[in-house]
Length: 72
Image (tube, rainbow, N blue to C red; front, side, top):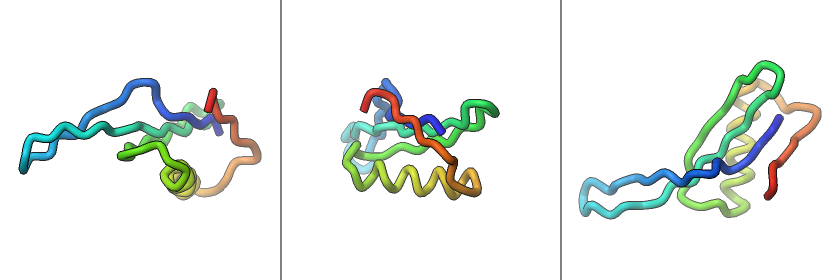
């Protein structure tokens, strides 16, 4: 499974006050099938990195033999 934070930052707008909040996109892809899991987080801290992996494993229905991070 190849994993990384996507290059572009998205933004979420708080409807109550108009504040624009950055959202960092985690992506995990199974390279042969091209099946992907994508989730946005409010920061790129270790806790969210680990949470993203757990959610990706649940989505894919298991853990791959190898994880390949890109330029972390």
